[in-house]
Amino acid sequence: MALIMMRSVAMTRRGFFKLKRSSNGIRAFSSLLTSPPSKAVFYERHGPPDAVTRVIEMEGVEVKEKDVCVKMMAAPINPSDINRIEGVYPVRPPLPAVGGYEGVGEVLSVGSAVKHLSPGDWVIPSPPSSGTWQTYIVKEESVWHKISKDSPIEYAATITVNPLTALRMLQDFVTLNSGDCIVQNGATSIVGQCIIQLARLRGIHSINIIRDRSDLHLQSSSSYRVGSDEAKEMLKRLGADEVFTESQLEVKNIKGLLTNLPEPALGFNCVGGNSASLVLKFLRHGGTMVTYGGMSKKPITVSTSSFIFKDLSLRGFWLQKLMNSDKVNECRNLIDHLLCLARQGKLKYEMELVSFDDFHTALDKALGKLGSQPKQDGFGICTLITCSMTQNVRQEPQETQVQNPNGSLCLPEGSRARCKAHLLKPKCIM
Image (cartoon, rainbow, N blue to C red; front, top):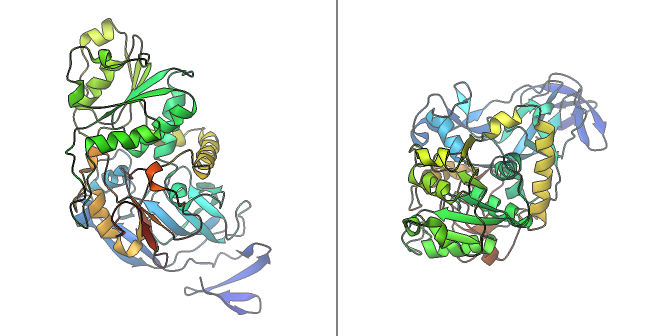
């Protein structure tokens, strides 16, 4: 925000506010502080996201004494974001609304009663909060969690929903020890990739199920599809012990495919339908399957014998419910832990950075258009590239990284990245 200093009064585009100086920047002590005008992804009704969303200019809003004005740096497009716009997600913001639910930004200004944040701090909404698809956002201090500025920006923007889901599910349902085993479908999703890596760090083995896919390679300048063999190799590099396609599991004795691995005590399902049944078949007696998604939109069918003779348990996990409880501070500590792993290179998933101006291209990509796999595939939504936008965007050899399955990053205007491609196409498409 451009400020014209005139004695102890500064002027914004929307009005005047008094201010005092601190060692970290400008802190307002009048309620007349307003945010800069903002660009936002806006929708007035529920429906297909590519039909109901539009990018608009929004006037600045008042920054009250307990408020923090944040300049957003990056925000992902997650499947749950799409579901909210479609009107099918259980919890939705009132209409009209601005899209987005997580992201990372830099504190621009703070109200007079704000105690723990200062201009220049990096923050994420924790619990996640609606409206992150805009260039400037104003919310109360309690919404924001300060993070280390050493965090790679793409991980900071995406750490809350998917990696935290993976970590909590590994911790909250079954006591797992080194040498134990888990099984999951949707293994190429961001949650699936994180489960593989977090389990491996604890010495826990993983059996992973992926959908069958054609072994297609580079098809055009705007389309890249990963075949089954290539997907398996990518997951193995992350630490997966076994990776099977669904068709490989069409056998009578599914556990006969395992060699030196123990029967899994815990399974994760984000697909439903037949894929969920395959997870159940792997579980040992007394095992638990946790469902956290239903990308196929097909119901889970469980045989009577699975309950009677195997004593299996079926559970559900919803991160939003957990983070709206008394576990917010605990979750924030886990987020810091996950960001530490990302800084150390122990938690990896590749994303694509693009200008906010190209939002609708990004949305088409996330919806499974432009040659990408359908979103329920959980893979191939984004091109594997790195962008040298800031020193905090991690540059790593691509043989250790995989494609982003769940979403891509929207960068506010003025933060267009200079992109450098490795292995795949250089064009930045969200």
